[in-house]
Image 1 (tube, rainbow, N blue to C red):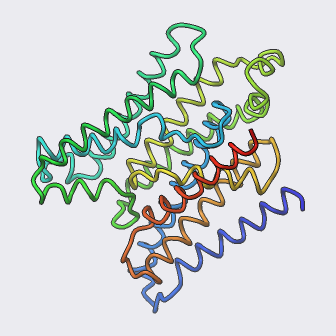
Image 2 (tube, rainbow, N blue to C red; image 1 turned 180 degrees about the vertical axis):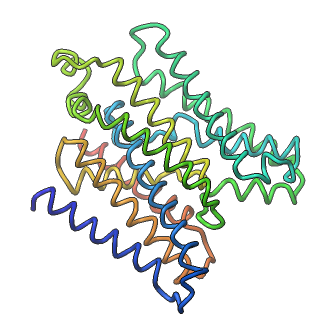
Length: 316
């Protein structure tokens, strides 16, 4: 089956999932329920596409299919930021109550952190990409330790607000924030779209890419920045989803069997929409909100991560 045919099938499945979520059990509430469901569908699609895109390009840069941008510590930084603000300023502070202020603060903090980290890596030539990953793991673990320490000391009532920030949620999403995030993601895609051909060559390895005329350092820096922006926006919008990018990216690799990033990213993005919209429908209609989608994704992603590790160890 050709890749274009496979992609069309996925698009149809995504459209069916969105239609099911939008119109199932609507009971004529077009004026009230439909706009709210529409915002949630846009938010889920936006989040899925951002995570899928950033994960595929990050794995291409690192040449490792079990790594995700969360290894850079951005998720841990987001939770730390929310914990620190609530611990020192309280859950009624404007940075927590006002979603717009919280969104801007979270996105700007994570992007600045990523830029500082990249600057530290690239200020001297010759630093391997895995050095950056090692620093990211260490810093992420440090952030997580501080968050855990503060959460132990925090007031139990305040901890409930922190706990809400620790898991991704698509309920009560601000419509204005969705449009803000959409604008940022679209601009990021426009900038990154020009480098798809470079990413195709980059997947062959650093030395091969340089010999074929690709400006390796420039492409890597640009892709790392775009990946950080996309993860920051999606995390600030709905919360951290640790293993989601790992799942959809590897499913796209297995389903399409191609090196073209235009196909891989499109496939992973559509799969993300199917998984998030369909999964949220199951959470709301089958589990009746007794659990959250992020818990299910992290459970499935953890099992899938172990499977990939075992698969890699057998192949080596």
